[in-house]
Length: 72
Image (cartoon, rainbow, N blue to C red; front, side):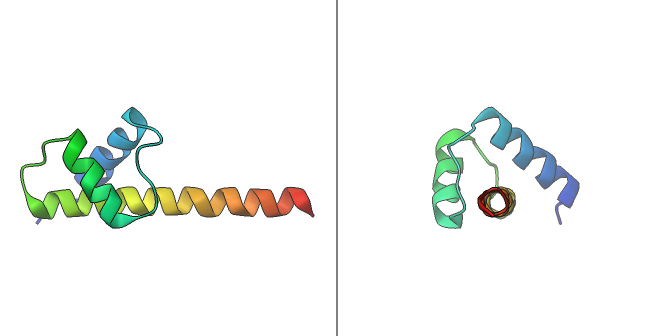
């Protein structure tokens, strides 16, 4: 079983190195991850892609909240 800290660190580093490549779609993130990095196992790739999706979904939600607050 992989430690979540390891997945989190790897995911955050990938998102920082490749800004704008990933979005909030899990399937698209898996495909982009396969193009960018060599991940040794399918399970690890899926966990990283899932965490990247989570990071981007939270960021998109934060942007929507900020936009809503500024328009009020």
